[in-house]
Image (cartoon, rainbow, N blue to C red; front, side, top):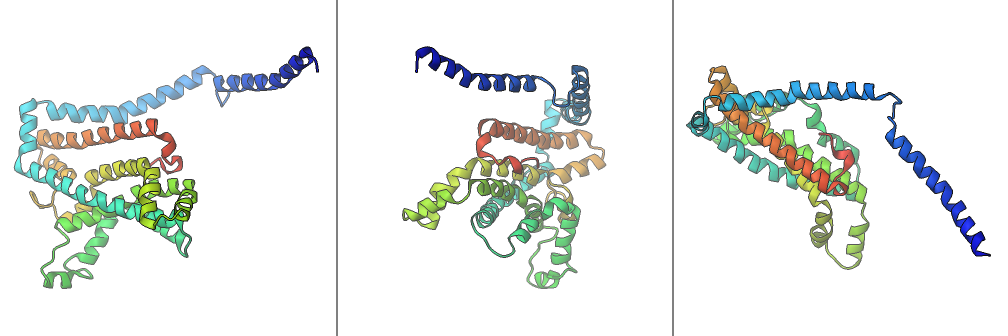
Amino acid sequence: MSDAAAGLTAAQVEEPWVAAKARSARRARSPVTGEGPVFAGVLIAVTVVFLALFLILPLAVVFYEAFRNGLSAYWAALVEPDARAAIWLTLIVAAIAVPANIVFGLAAAWAIAKFRFPGKSFLITLIDLPFSVSPVVAGLMYVLLFGAQGLFGPWLGAHHVSIIFAMPGIVLATIFVTFPFVARELIALMEDQGTTDEEVALSLGAGGITTFLRVTLPNIKWALLYGVLLSNARAMGEFGAVSVVSGHIRGLTNTMPLQVEILYNEYNLQAAFAVASLLALLALVTLALKTVLEARFNDALPGKARGH
């Protein structure tokens, strides 16, 4: 074959690819719906106005009211004994609930993604239960179980064990409303990854724990951190379930959201917005970390598990 014929053949082979690439570029530049730039501008404007009214403006009001009387008044509201007790209780509850969710999430995801067993679909449904049950109903369930007139209440009272209107009840309610986050993130990713890596490790003589620590855990570490962020944010901001089981005892069983409610009902707006600003700051930090994880480690995060 001559050089000219070879060159012609290469051009003929390359031409459909170039044409397809050009068509794809034109489709990327054109709107999917076929509408013009005016319609796109209206949609963007509606989105921006909605976010400004229902997200940015409320956040701005919270921080404005918190600092309106100056930094000294803001700090005085945070170091007030009841406020400090609420902050510490919130941190302690989160410090217990989040590790419990990590253990449960890892165990549940490992079992669901790596094994086949009867009732697997039912277990997944149970994990999703807190997404469909009102937090207030969840708190009421614990009252009916562990309250003074509940199923286990008389036995607990006879043994001087307090769950409802005490920290154990707050921890249980918080775990209930937060445990799907870690599990759901890990289940989606581990199902996508399959079992090939673990099978190779086991065939090379690695044990179950070694396989988990050296193969599975490094593959899911960013999804695990992603779930932990979501779980921690929900644990610190939970109101409904905790409100039912806490008893609203000032300085003892009030978390930060409950303390905000009490201060606001007492018309102590400075202190209420000061504590609320801490929760808002936590939300902003969580959102920033979440965005960084999605931007830098997008391939290691399960796309179908996002959207919580």
